[in-house]
Structure formats: C-alpha cells, structure tokens
Image (cartoon, rainbow, N blue to C red):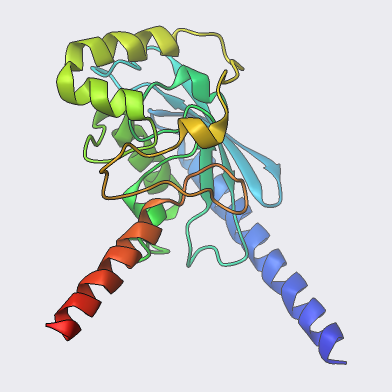
Length: 219
C-alpha cells in the first residue's frame, strides 16, 4: 500500500514538472525569442534543447551554441542540469571542454537560485557568462590561466574553437579536462543526472563554510 502511494506520488510530481517545463517553453516561444536565445525546443517531457547566439563583442560572436537542459524532480525549487552539447567549441574558463558542464553561481549555490528566475533568465545568465568569464575559478585550467595572463591570446583561442563545426567532440577525458586548477577555491564535481560537471561550486563552498565554523568554535 505504502509503495503504491509513493509510486503514485512520484508520478504526480513528474507530471507537474513536465507540465511546468512545457508551459514555460511555450510561453517563452509565444512571446517571441530574443537574442541571444536563437532557438528553443522540447526534446521530451523533461528535456529542452536551446541555441544561444554568441554575444556581440565576445570571442563567441557570430556563432551558435547548442544547450541541453534536463529538469529534475525538484524543479523549479532546484535548477535544471544544463550543458553545452558541443563542448570542444567552447574554450571558456567556466565551461568544461570534456562534457559541456557550466560553472555558474545560480546552478551551484542554492541560496542564489529561485523559482522566479525562470527559463528566459536562466538562458540569459548562461549567455552573459560567455561575455563575462570568471577567472577566479573554473572548469578549464588552460582557459583560466590564459585569461589571467594574456586576455588577447585567450580571445584568439576562444574564436578558433568557436569556429569548429557543430558536433565536434572533445579529445580528452572529461575527468581530466574538468579538474580545477591547483589552488582554486572551488573544485569541480560531476553532476549526477547528466554527469556533466555543472554542479561543482556549491560542494566546496559548503566544505569551506564547515571548516571556518570549526575553526571559530575551536578558537
């Protein structure tokens, strides 16, 4: 009896998530997509595909990049798992070239995510990250180091990668490529649903907070 009730509750929750995702997608398309959101489509009840246009003035300008969004049971109270589907075309400090996982505050810090953010703001936030990469930490050691030491060289490398054909696959293992640089305050971990490395930052922030709390209590 209990197992049947749990099964029914799980199915009901799944239906609610699917209905919300469909509603948000249809609402955004009905209002008219605005760049940098170039396309949006439902792939199944829990997955959406999106295309972002590279922001003007960034190394990614003039190129389109596909995203996959997977919505878990806790959406909208937790963000979807989001990744770029052709990660080798994205040479960026905060994007894993092995899996397409994204290091973005709203994905990794539960205090910064809100159900009110919605689909459009989420996609706009990812596009903004392309224009304004974070160099304090990241998922691509080489890009982080290059952006810090030689921004012009970073821009050239990003332009070269962006010009690769869609569907280009990484030539390195995701685990090695997404290893955070030594000394970074935030280390990458793989996201369980898509295994894309996108939910990394919150874990080490939590560890640091616990360590600080312990130090305070011990003093």
